[in-house]
Length: 239
Image 1 (cartoon, rainbow, N blue to C red):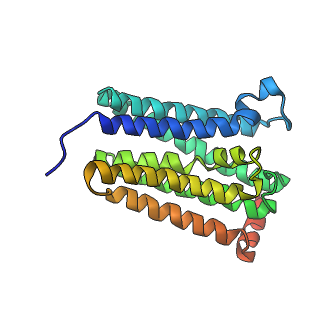
Image 2: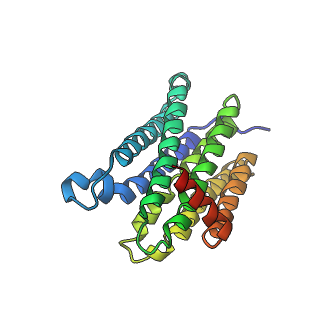
């Protein structure tokens, strides 16, 4: 027997969306959002500004979409869906470009290891996010799958924010692993909520968990893999 509709679940999705976006805002506040105020080096390039603006627009729309569902405006949510998909596609393209450019220039967060190895985190992470969003769009006619996969996709892009939060806290060397762990922790919270509310964890979350765990394993492997270093070197030289 299916559970009766409740406002509590849409509110949960909205709260988790806000928490995820807050992580990204706090992480990028010194280097992007508050940079004009605190004048933190280095200067932003046109590419990073574009990536930041598009990413911010997508996050704002994501929260708006969750709020539309929470307030019973599902029709408006569906109308804005195409815009969300386009914004995410553009954000992903700029994200890949930014990561490759950073690898070429040797730009990495403090204590993050060699630039070519670190490229694995954004490139593999963004690939996982694309897979989750594509799966969510494929299942847009099934709201139970769609909303969970989209929430997992939002979790999957919090990594860069988490990594930057860890730097001033003195855990810079744990930035990559810590960011992956927090992503998985956010998904675990959603899975626990599902179990408590619906007496089971929805298959969409297990699918997302498999992708996130595979991402964690792949990134960990790539950081010490000669094969990845050769691939990253070829990628940066081809640009």
